[in-house]
Length: 214
Image 1 (cartoon, rainbow, N blue to C red):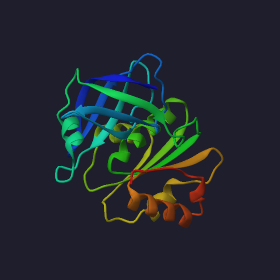
Image 2: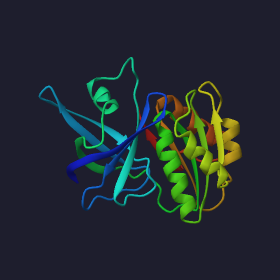
Image 3: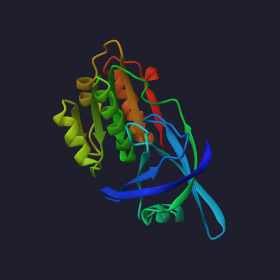
Image 4: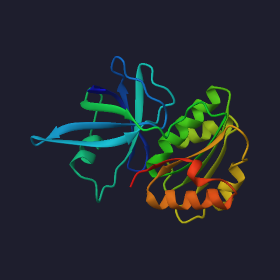
């Protein structure tokens, strides 16, 4: 789908991290873990980036979580950081098949803005009667309130510093049981470490659903 979407709310959910909610266009549907392409025009030039959904469902609205590097972010990052309710953007998608698809148990390994799809998938799994565990590695915690609520609902939430190894937390989170799927959302170093940790825990990294942010 190629259309436009209007920002309905902007919330700061961590250091230099924002959750942007959009009014869902007619006919738009997506699953947690899929991603969309958002764009605008700056100084007469079209700019666009991909962002993964951080809402467990799409009904009247959907959400993406955006991490912005204040030292390296470009014009579009500045545009998103300053977005307000009523801001209109172009919207394409959804894209990607590395998303929640009714798995009975979801184990999500995430870093950086990957915490957005992590909490969304865990919320969706619990809402549908399933189980979830989250391994989240980052020095700066985003979506802390949602992580706390998930922990209260019985989700095993492992919060690690950026320099921490993943092996123990991944091994503790995975059971190898039927219906369990491991999801990985983050930048390349997190993805590589997660895949190694999955293998070390006796799992199959090739069977994991992985989205590498680059």
